[in-house]
Structures are given as structure tokens and as C-alpha cells.
Length: 143
Image 1 (cartoon, rainbow, N blue to C red):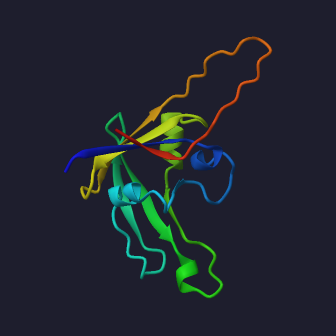
Image 2 (image 1 turned 180 degrees about the vertical axis):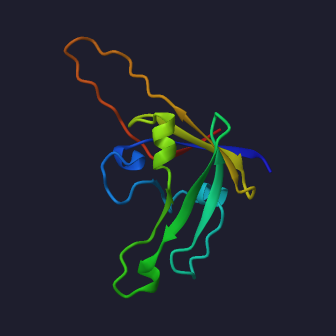
């Protein structure tokens, strides 16, 4: 199977800098190619999850939790139906990840082994007196 890569511009919530309880990366249900890249999770089970083995640029292996929070599908009062990759805060700190940096996740479909890297955000200095606008985006497949 061919190697695939996906990148995501990091937000404060992604990196855990907001202090919220939902630190981690949101994986949109609408991005089926990204969901197919990640291991399959059985939605018939409540909150199915798996651990991803992810190697960084230094060769350190990290364990991230990939989970489908789906109590909305199982409980009358459930509200969540979303995919997330969690347990990433220590990695982001070690990598010096900041808001605006890009996280790149690469691997082969079905291998359950991935590589991760952080591409630092570099702003082009604006003309004096000009406001700087940073546009944050979701996941993008790298071709």
C-alpha cells in the first residue's frame, strides 16, 4: 500500500494550551479518506478506541489514543459523536509545538504504524502598521 500523509494546522485546543478537557486532535467524520487512513473503529461498540504507535523525527515512539466518542449513538442523553486522537500533549510539549504550526501524520493504510513531525509556522513580517491575519484550517491530505 502507498504511503499517505495528512497535515493539520494546530490550534490552541489541539495543543492543550486552552486548558480544556478535550485536548487532542479532532478528526472530522466528513474526511473519509483520513478515517480510512486510521484504524477502523467499530461504532456498534460504545466509545471504541485503539492505540496508535507513532514515531517522531528523533526516533521516539509515542502512544496516542484514537477514539470514537459516540455516546450519542448509545445513550438516550448522549451528545458526542466525534473522532479524536488524544494523549498527545506530552509529544506537543517535547516537539515545541505552537499554535499555527503544522502537524504531519504519515504512514501506510492498515499498518497501524505512523510517523509524526511538526513543521514550525514562520510568519512573513508585515509592513509596519499592517495587521497580521492567521488563518487556521483543518486536516489536509498531502499529495
